[in-house]
Image (cartoon, rainbow, N blue to C red; front, side, top):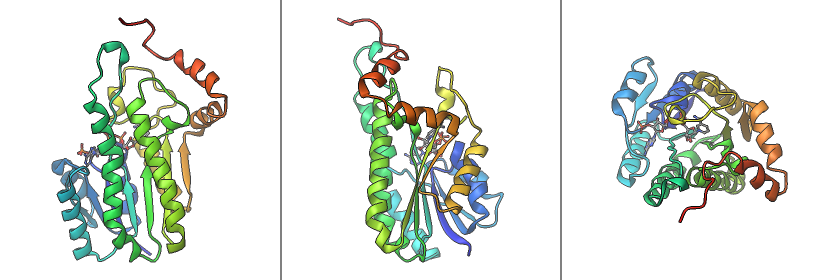
Length: 254
Ligand SMILES: NC(=O)c1ccc[n+]([C@@H]2O[C@H](COP(=O)([O-])OP(=O)(O)OC[C@H]3O[C@@H](n4cnc5c(N)ncnc54)[C@H](OP(=O)(O)O)[C@@H]3O)[C@@H](O)[C@H]2O)c1
């Protein structure tokens, strides 16, 4: 049966590639992000895609989008939480702008969490509700400069797992997605070598396939994520020693 799907964070990168994938399974696919122009350009290519532009950190915007889906479709089968941002903490650059933590946590954690709670009544009307959270493999072992991004994704992953436990009895499933590096506007800002970089199309195909096969946790590409998972099994002292070799902050600041 075709589904009512809502993809939040659909304008670029993995999200834009997911539009093409998820449209195939959708009776109606709602796509959201802040950039209305990019969403419109994507939606024009499909007959079953509607745009709902808003900022995931804005309560009024979230509520307006949920009201629109409720009015048009009456239920939600799959909610895909893909909106995300990344800012690195550079201790060698002097004082850290603490607003950075707020921005990253608001977009990657507080916004998607609030949205899910606010939309839960629509997922409860589905026969097989599903929440898909795009987290990150960054949390498998502590990586340099990822204090804010990694914390946001660790919190998001824990929250998704607890939602999985508490919603299981209601028949609502949760899929956690932990990608390695994917070539998107977010990672195109990185000034370091990204191993095993995937295309957004490749990542989107894997995500759709995982959702349709009823997976609980997807991580890819395995040749990268298994290495990180294995490293995460080492004593923390060893992980810190290994990963500090990647740190740029080598000298004592006064
Ligand atoms: N690329 C990777 O290597 C990688 C690896 C692991 C996990 N991820 C995760 O994958 C997800 C997608 O990232 P991406 O790499 O495809 O990056 P991207 O191209 O920058 O996409 C981010 C998406 O989130 C939307 N977004 C950002 N802030 C938003 C806000 N406040 N409200 C609503 N939408 C917002 C953006 O649209 P607007 O700017 O138009 O709002 C865009 O559609 C993120 O959660 C990211 O953390 C990416």
